[in-house]
Length: 132
Image (cartoon, rainbow, N blue to C red; front, side):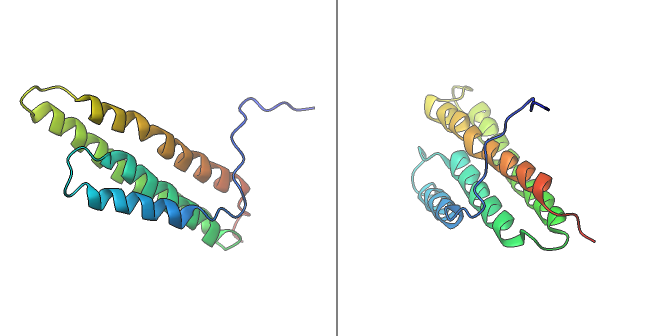
């Protein structure tokens, strides 16, 4: 009997929350245009979570779905890194040269959705049928 070393959370086969995560994230990003205290990094992570969920659901069972999932992961992790870096740069360029408490909570809270993006992508890549 083989015991798993790392038990990843099971991802539902049909997760209908993808469009909702995208909508919530985009709504928060739009609100961030007017309010400076809005958690935009977390919003970007929510958009990435929704887009990954929709991508995995849409391409399940199709040929070369693994490439689409890897490309999706690359794009959204890059966007997340840009938002994360921008938040850190903005804090460093400010008058106090420190990360404020709201920005720090935003960065910490954004780790959970992005971790789910990586887990969903990893789970999908492990369970997709090879193209052929």
